[in-house]
Length: 174
Image 1: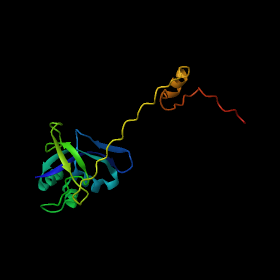
Image 2 (image 1 turned 30 degrees about the vertical axis):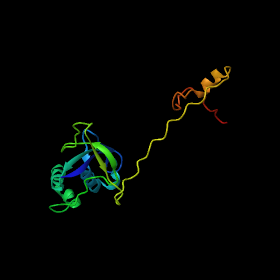
Image 3 (image 1 turned 60 degrees about the vertical axis):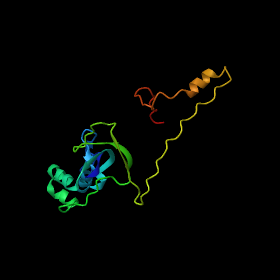
Image 4 (image 1 turned 90 degrees about the vertical axis):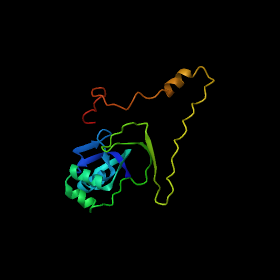
């Protein structure tokens, strides 16, 4: 058996943004299924693909599952033959993901599988460290400017909002 990524993704039907299907954690797709959807709907119309779990399967089992779910023709076009060459892991992913069952559902999120795939030369990709948290500014020694500093340091209440009727109308003929 080989390991296979289960993923979340967005699928834009017809490529015009009218109907977008979101495959979330309750309805994930496999990485080979994403490849079939790329052929059927166009590569640019399936996006935001993110692995969420790792399952185990064989190429034949996955091809049969996809043929049952979709028509046989696109599946055979993407994965031809009786024993197809099927890429089941997203390339260049270094993740520690939970295990999934044959439907992509995570049974125990604490039960994780560590998968490290490299860039093709056997070395893993570097892991980026998060930036350090910003340090708070030093306390002021001036007591008379505290109110002005508090007003200046207060965050804005939110984005600018246009309220109709609150602004004067422009003069005609001006």
